[in-house]
Amino acid sequence: MRSDRSSAPLGLKIAAAAGLAFLHLPLLLIFVYAFTTEERSYQWPPPGLTLQWFAVTWNRPDVWQALGLSLKVAAISTVIAMILGTLCAAAVSRTKFFGRETISLLVILPIALPGIITGIALRSAFNLADIPFSTWTIILGHATFCVVVVYNNAVARFRRVSGSLVEASMDLGADGFQTFRHVILPNIGTALVAGGMLAFALSFDEVIVTTFTAGQQQTLPIWMLEELVRPRQRPVTNVVAMVVVLVTLLPILAAYYLTRDGDQIAGSGK
Amino acid sequence: MSLAQSSAILPERGGVRGSLSDTVWRKPTLLLLLMLAPPVLWLGIVYLGSLFALLLQSFFSIDEFSGLINREFTFKTYGELLRPSNIDIIVRTVSMAAMVTLAAAVVAFPIAYFAARYARGKWKALFYLGVMLPLWSSYLVKVYAWKLILAKEGILTWLFAKLHLTWLIEAWLSLPIVGGNSLSVSFTGTFVVFVYVWLPFMILPVQAALERVPQNLVEASSDLGATPAQTFRNVLFPLALPGIVAGSIFTFSLTLGDYIIPQIVGTSHLFIGQAVYAHQGTAGNIPLAAAFTVVPIVVMGFYLWGAKRMGAFNAL
Image (cartoon, rainbow over all chains, first blue to last red; front, side, top):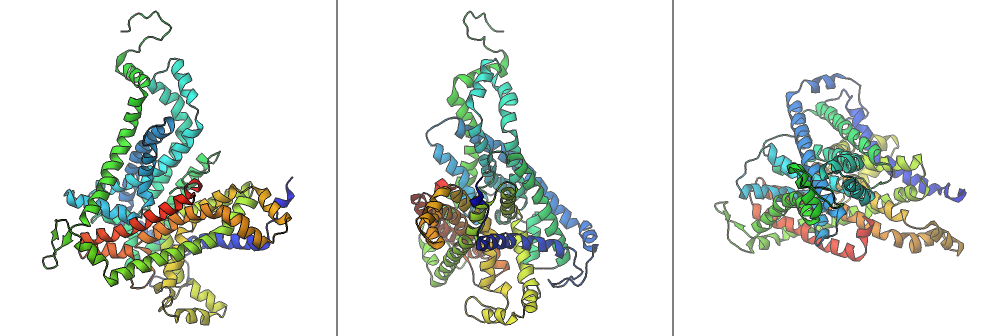
C-alpha cells in the first residue's frame, strides 16, 4: 500500500537500534552479575557462575524486612492514590468549572518539581509540626506523587466514556451508586487497575523522597542506596537488584496490556 | 416510604442511600465539591502546605555558634546562598542539566523518529515497550548497573582493552574537568548516567510530536529538491521542537534536583541536590537547604514559562 514507508535509511536504523541497545544492555548486565562468583569487586567477565547468592539473600532478615516495608508502603499509597486520583479525574473530566486548570497543575506539580524539593518540603513540615517519622510519613509522601499516575490514566479513559451512558442508566431508574457500580466502574476499571499498577511500581522503587521521610526505617530502595554508597555485600546487592527489576517489570507489562487498546498515553507523564 | 406521585417523574427513592443519590443528581455542584474535596485537601495540605513551610524556612537563619535555627524573618540565608562556592555549585548543576538535555535530545531523536514513522504493528508495540520498560524500571538499579559498567575492573574497560583502545579512555581521563581517576569518578561518568536515566522522558514527547507531522510534508520537501539534511533542518526539526522542549522539561528538572547519581558516580564536587541533602542532614542548616531548593524552583519557573510560550505543553 505505502511501500515508501517500509524502508528506513540505514543510518536511522542503526541510530535507533543503538539507542535502544543503550537503554537495555545495562539492565541485562544486572542479570549476569546476580550469578557471579566474584564478591569483592565488579570484575568483568565474571570468573564463574553460581546460584549460592540467591540462597544467601533468601536468608537475610534485613532484606526481607526492607522488602516487607516497601510492599506495605506501596500497597497503601496505591490505594490512597487510586481513590484521590479517580475522584479528581472524574471531577475534572465530567464538568468544566473555574480553576479546573489549576487543579490539573496541582496534581502534576509533585512530579514536575524535582523529587528532592518534595522530600525536603515534607521533612521540614514534619519538623515544624513535630510529627515523628513512621511508616505513615513515608506513605504520606508516596501517595502524594502517585496520585498523578492514576489521574493521568483515569482522565484519558473518562474522555472516552460517553456521559450519555450515565444519563441513560439514571433514566432507567438506577440510583447513583448502581450507576457507578454497573456503568462507570466497568468502563474505567482497566484504566484504574493500570494506573494503580504504575503507582505501585513508582512507589516501590522511589528513593529520593523516601530518604527524607523515612527516618531510620529502611525500604528496599533505601537498603540498596546504602549498599551503593558503602558497598559491603555486593553479591546480595546484585541479587536484590535483579529481583527489583523483575518485581517492577510485571506491573508495567500488565498495565501496558490493560491499556493498549486506544490510549497509548498511559503513564507517559511519570 | 415514598409519597404518591402523579407526574411522569419517578418517585423519590427511599432510604439514606436513595435520597443521597437523588440529592447528588439534582445538584451536580455538590457532587463536584464532594469529588474534589479529598484530592484537593490532600494535595493542598500535605503538598502545598509543606512547600510553603519550606519556603518559610528559607527566610529563617541559623545561628553559627549555637547551630540553632533563629525563627525570624531575614534575607541572611539568601546572602549565604550567593557565596562564590555556592554559585559554583549552581553553575555546575545548571550546565550539567543543559548538556544532559542536549545529549538526550540527540540520542532520542532517531529512536523517536523511527518509532513514529517507520515502525508499524508489532514493531511499534516493541518500540513502545522498549522505551516504557527502562522508563519504569527502578532508578537505583539503573544507577547501580552503571556503577558496574564504569567500574575500573568493569565491562567497559574490558571492552576497550579487547578493542585495543585502552589508550583512548586514558587520554580522555587525562583531560581536565571531564577526566578523573576512572570513569566512575569523573564528570563524564555522571553525564552518561544522567543521559541514560532520563533518556526515555525525552523519547516519548518527541515521538508524540513527530507522530503529528504529516508524511506528505516530508515528501513535498524532497520533491521540491531539498536534501535529507535540508528537510530535517527546515521541516522536521521545527515541527519536532515543541516535543523536544516538552521532553527537556523532564531531563532538565530531574537533573537539577538529583543528588544520588553525582554521589554514586561522580567527583567530589557537589551538585545542588547534594548541597541540599548535606545542609539539611549533617549540618542541620535547614534554612540554607531550603534556600538552595528555591534555585531549581526559580530556574524551572522560567523554563516552564518559556516552554509554554513555545507551545510545548500541547506536546506533553
